[in-house]
Image (cartoon, rainbow over all chains, first blue to last red; front, side):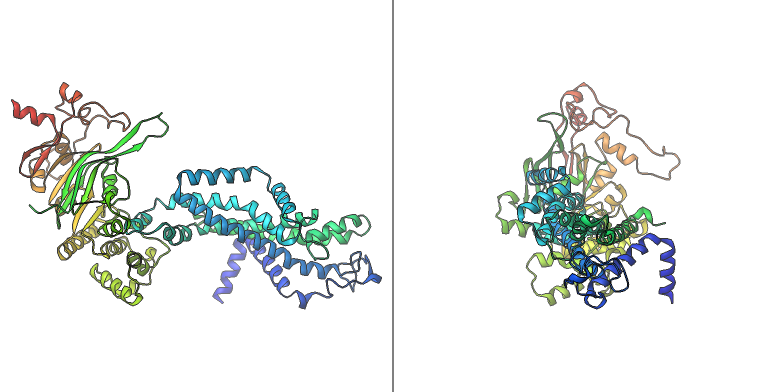
Length: 279
Length: 323
């Protein structure tokens, strides 16, 4: 009962954060239970039912090969979540390691690393991801890798800034007096103490990552047909937009809702971890 | 007297001065010589920015020397190999001013106290645990604190944890960098008494860095007064407080608040501290000194022997003796 009351208070106080959390929860649940909730097989061709408008059998219509769009969107949620979490996870992991080492060592290593990161940040992230993805070979896994590499500098900068301030804290000095090696200082003192801003950044980053992954698929550098990927579906449906509006629109709406969910939730998490927020 | 445990010989530390052009540097610590004997407490007082803490870091080998040398039991840290350096480092520990910042907020108390043990060859988990309990007991904390986090403790308790960690490797010297100035007055006394007791039990030597003269007087055997990177007066505690010779020490002692209505409340040192990158010629104190003359503006005095247990660095002393 008390928990319920707290939930109600929370919903009233932070409606947008709760909305975001609910959207994320629904998307996650749907993608986990995809085989149970999808009305049709997303890959079964049914050439007699090509490009059917939304109706009672195909709730959101069918595509040019007669596949059920709703089922494809449901399975597509798996790919988009995987892309979002994978990209942020890889970028965050490398960012944390590179950033904390760079911050602790300082000097020339730090200078070299940070200039490299500046160069990477100078490119628009989509353009760089596009080039990398094309170079690695267009498929879904490579597109995730490419976007993750492009996103590494964001986390490096964040963690390095934290590391710079944490390494001057006295518990690090104390650890040095009893002979702690650098690996110990990084893994035990610096990384655990710089995680909370990284978590915020990562939550906010998932939405953007999903968007970029979908964009790469749309251009043809990400997931390849017949994969049920939202960006690829929008891309295929584009040519039918004038007569069969449902083909491109519904996957697009799915991207929109999911990204908005992560952004709302990320904003909420950021506000909650901001000390000035508590009053 | 005894062979000194720690001996600083004309120690100097310069920091490069960024943004002021080439070749300039700040002399944070300048020609400091000081001996600390086993079991002894040496107080180090001086105003903010005079180099007290830098000197502490030098003693801990957290910073490299620019000139001079530091001998610990006759050994120069710089001449040792890695294993020996590690062993020597464990002999000198520190307790910081702010226990909030000196304890990793993500560690439990047990992890904090066992960290130095883990890093210095205590492989056996059970023995480590036993040792941590002993240490906490020594500083007056019970077992129930083992699983707590620093933010769940009061300032005084946190400082006890920091002390337990500092004594975990059986050091011979502990640098106390203003260990009580972040604490309430009532708690300060408890911590000071705890330090005194531990010093007696474990034969610890303290380098006690502070700007609280009353506390220094309570704890120290001898006191070094620092000004602008130099030791300007060094004397046994009673001698220094009863018979200060350097003009700076005199105003420093007069600035201790007192309740005697006859005396003026507080004496202020007039004039400005010289900026660090423009070291003045002559005595570093001459711009604020009440008895400075032309000689003081040109030639800096050296630390000189006045009598047993009292050294001063002031031109007026040598003047007085010549006349």
